[in-house]
Image 1 (cartoon, rainbow, N blue to C red):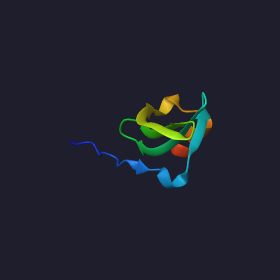
Image 2: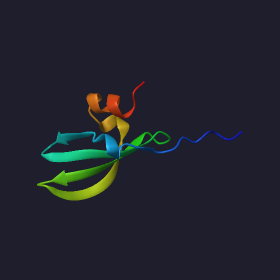
Image 3: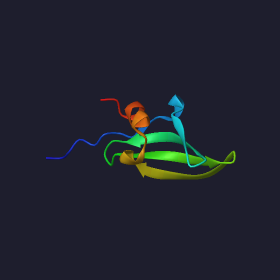
Image 4: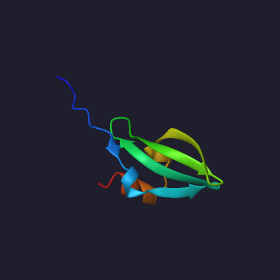
Length: 69
């Protein structure tokens, strides 16, 4: 019996972002299968990189916006 795979949820239009250690982090998408978010990291008004972070590494307020339960 195959598991139902959930689709990646695009969150870029919601403009969910936060600041951590002088870096502006904006959430792009949420993958409920792996419980990871894809984010863009901007420092000094220059986009630095796109990376994936585990949902557990986000601040509590942001987690509620990404995955309301």
